[in-house]
Length: 156
Image (cartoon, rainbow, N blue to C red; front, top):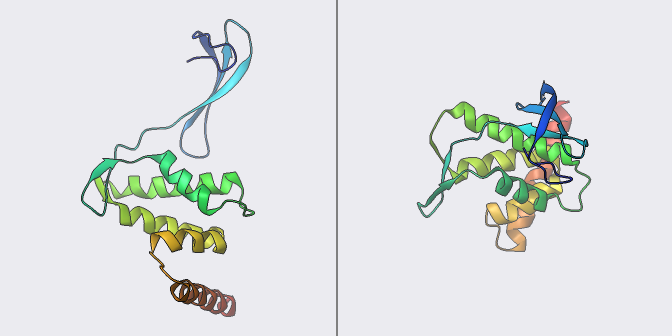
């Protein structure tokens, strides 16, 4: 492990704990500069994503995170909430136990999660993902979302 402060490659593990998000958190100390830092280790999801045009590519957590962050830009959504959503999506994909998954499945999980997280972020993502091409389509989606919210509040 390379020290993020001085670049030295010899570090020692001071403490190891299970992280709440399904990985291992290690507290490390650099043998050269003596500074401490934390690392997160989590298993790689060996999953291939089947795109709409039939291409296949490796699942990329960072790409998923980037897309959700863009939808949540300038919204009151905590970084931890976004990370948590990505963690839940990854966990669902792992539980499926498949080597390949359609990009549509991942998009549906994002849409479902954003709907709970932030309605405006949901609409931003839906415009691209659902291909809402004009204002009428966007309005129809907003109306549907408002109707769902109204129905849910009546049930509560």
